[in-house]
Image (cartoon, rainbow, N blue to C red; front, side, top):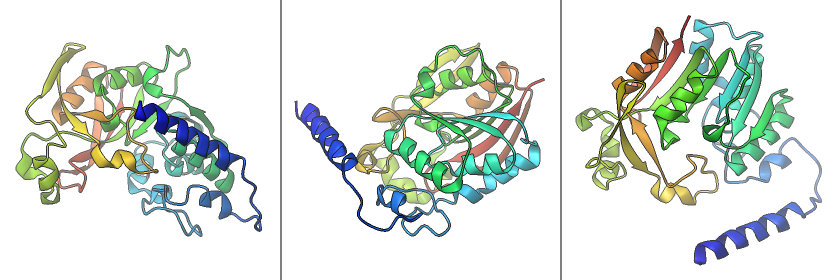
Length: 273
């Protein structure tokens, strides 16, 4: 009952905020102030942005060194606040981006206006995307796979839409001694359910995942993780084997970081003939 009341109060507060008039000089800054404490991305000349260098991300620069995205059709899953979208457009790509989180979607529109982007931003869950006859040259899935409850299903869905996939994701490494020591307390507090490893067969491949609980981060106004209170982290080798089973014969890996402060993570560029 209390959860229903909370949702009603949040909806009511949003309606009040949306009906408010702003009585100050119009500037590039004022739209960012709507989401005062929610930004993750750093933007030039915006004082209340976050710290994530999304418009100057070395992972995307690495991608551009591997393939020329100019004039390519790109489907971006989870654009967050359109930092990578900006980089893709600047490199000449034609982008459609899908964002499920309400706040992140609206912040993308603020950034689209601020940076003059041409991208079409769609609001909805790419994990329930119905069969789509349209195919894309590349799918960008940076920071989304580890937020999925069923990452293997999401990989299979992406494989139906493009022959090139760029992924940056956290993965589960079973040797916990290799993790960043700063995560010891979270590991001990069972943020990851180490005692119940899930296993399923997908496209003839054994895929193992471990449940990750969001916990207190769910209360942050800028939270834009998964659509539930938990997600599943896939084993690195299982992810690579699954991609190969789906026909991705070329898999390039970079930024493989076992000591990442939020858990082991890496980049992949997957291509098939």
